[in-house]
Length: 371
Image (cartoon, rainbow, N blue to C red; front, top):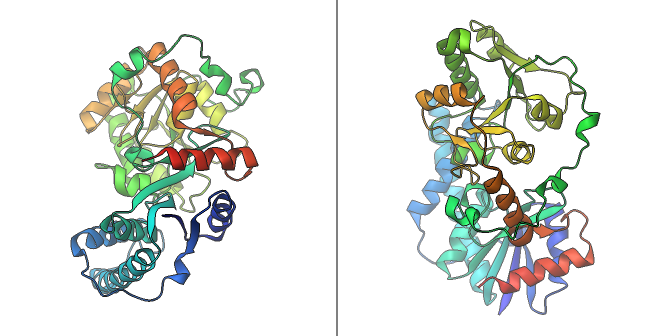
């Protein structure tokens, strides 16, 4: 049987090619190779769901934000047809190669989701890879990434996990003593904005559709809290091209919302001096927990664990969480054991970008262990 690696980007194709050299029977499949369709039935429901997610992603992009209904009607028709064709091509490419496992990067992007549908319909096991949740690590998971991953969510699991010898503070990659509190209020809640088109927002944010919505939700909370309201400091994601300054400016009725445009203030520094951090489901939540900060999560995040974060699914819950953020603190035992599990069992050591021989061997071993 053969292990396949599916790559839609050159950088991942190169990485998968290195991994493939450590397997006796493997094949790296570039999506451009899959051009001949199969004669088989199309799982319309699954593919239409993937197209719906793609359209939601495009609607959140600044380029498509104000397109009309007619545009989206034809765009949907075009992408549906294209996706049916892709499915048939991927199905044939996989069916002809005697494959039992396929490794995909991320797995949530459109082409990857289509190939995973084809693979699963052929009985091929999908394994997903991504950047590490912790510095110097890589993620590999048969369930998926982000909210779909296999990290345990039960508080009871972490209450009894540790041997008491793990120091998660060693994971912090900066020296707190070097962080100067420049241009920052005495007390504030830090809010890292995410990328509008990221799968974290499109797939795993049930009640906040984008960052504009996020800002307005925080503004409403600030207005309702009135004199109780803390200062909220927003920072735009470095990979996001959208400008939120006007949205913040129009929300200044509360006079408590600030958008930083100073790149000298790092995320680590903003977390360190904050009284709490509010995020939808960003990995900044993980960074904040490393610093023992109160994390208020508004979306579906794998770290939404009782004792670890304050999870909010409504505006009312958010307001209550903000009120409690000064006196509520994460459980030290749950934090320590959570990070111990990530390091000892879940994450693979080594950055995939470095591709050391030891790292590559560890990845192949994990792939072979997954059944």
